Amino acid sequence: MKKFATTVLAVAALAGMAQADVYTGGTGGNIADATTSNSVAGAGVSTFTLLASNAANPTISSFNSLTITMGHSWAGDLVMTLTSPSGAVADIVVRPGVTSATTFGTGTNFGSSSGSTPGTATYTFVQSGGANLLPAPATGFYAPGSYNILSAVTPTVVAPGASGLGYSVFNGLDVNGTWTLTIRDLGVTDVGSVVDWSMDITTVPTPGAAALLGLGGLVAGRRRRA
Image 1: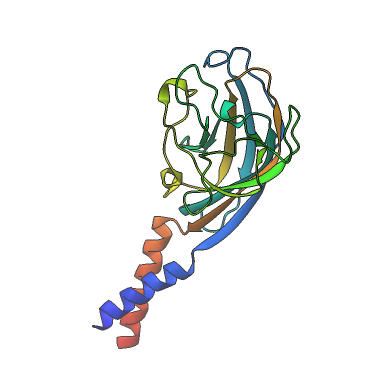
Image 2 (image 1 turned 90 degrees about the vertical axis):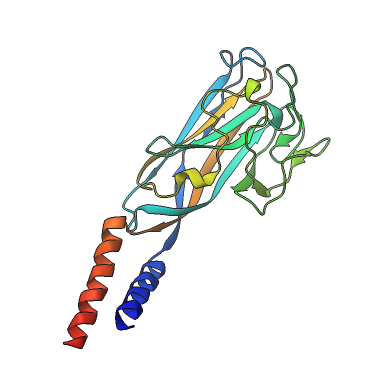
């Protein structure tokens, strides 16, 4: 019974070491426009990076959210993915409203105004619990706030790199390193930009550190019994 109790305490100690951090400093810039609509080869591709470093607990236990301040005048043009330092990829937005290889999806803006030159607004993309991107508002723009990530539903019109996976693909990976937000524009004319972005991630000690903590708890238990 004492050995069981000691093990439970070690597990509880590990749970107590879980740490949620917000990683800021994601780069921004213009979103490159497509040169040919509905063509992977003609897509505009823009990459924005964020360096996560010196995490005390480096192992991801849950990826909680991605927050982006951005604008774009036709949401249905965009494929947005997030890539971890080790190369795991999660879809964030995949051409909302597109139903075939020749359609353009929702003309709703990401940003604070309607029109061909939108302002910017802040969006937090969560695994679940946010608002749905579909059905989109008929006109105007997505309001700032929290939205569910939208996985691929029409692979024939999705640019390479979109995996259809959720944030769970990052679980167990090392948070440290360069993360990459990639935005592909698959429709001509409409434009946009990213101001900045951040990630909310919960991490725990590495499995090796966890094992040492558990062993230390057992050794301490034995010493108390001596």
